[in-house]
Image 1 (cartoon, rainbow, N blue to C red):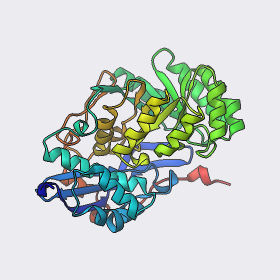
Image 2 (image 1 turned 90 degrees about the horizontal axis):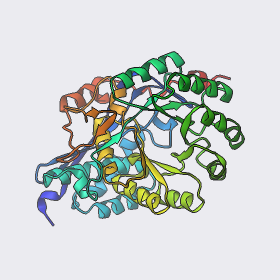
Image 3 (image 1 turned 120 degrees about the vertical axis):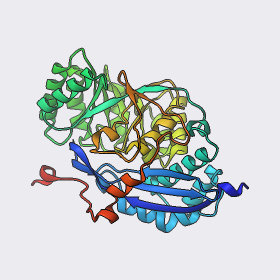
Image 4 (image 1 turned 30 degrees about the vertical axis):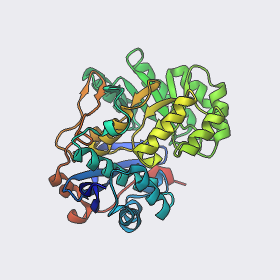
Length: 392
């Protein structure tokens, strides 16, 4: 055992970073992101960083920034400290033994471990994850202001700056007919200039999806993300089998490798949305992607609106995956008013340039961590503005 690779210390903090505009989803509007940052030291003095960000706190899944930090401080960190950081799978097994679920928390710790080990060997993290297959990926941008004119202006500006030509539209908060009209207006304004996808974020039941998804496809949508509840695999399977000229993507329905195997067996979707946090880490993401490749299911690089730290970690694992993909949406840093790294990953000709090392290839700014640290600044949690979403 290399003494220099022993995990010596782990610290966590919650940041509160405002967004540049409201980010509206089917379940609420986000005006602030609150990622949990893990800082991990090896005995040799090398430091690594990890991140777990949730979209809207516990309104997306069971974990919140507060619960993530508690799980790490109380259970996961004690299980990892004193262990050989280079034994990734063994560390995962220890974390699973002391704490069930809590995939976001585990992903943040594993991320910090991999960053530290890669830096200790002066290697990019992708060399520890199977090797790079992609140097860049098409980068999508989400149109989620809820206003047609604002979304169209934003998309046209992104096109002019050659930053994005794939746009995802968040729907599900309004009546389905209003959502279809909203998407159709944007599609007409961007016809021939961009590729459009929609994310319903589980807002529709099976019958609603069967009625309205064909209209979205007719308007020009090519990829439809999680149109029904995560448990409604039968409806997802039916839509996948019957929907013409568009692909159905599972997101909330595919978290674990077991979820992935179940969807593959039932031919219940065309695409997996991969997100490091919901899978429980970089290694688990590769396992889900391997099932997708074996089952002839495409992948898409999703986001939990991380800072450049978590986005770079995701980029490293996405760079190692197969060729059947639909790009990525690691735009989280661009949605935040500021970042926590010295320099962001560059975007060139609408493609995110995937980073090299050491570690995740970005340098975390300690001053920026202090600037947004909730405890240091006395900030308070404001995860989601539910507003109209809770109106009766």
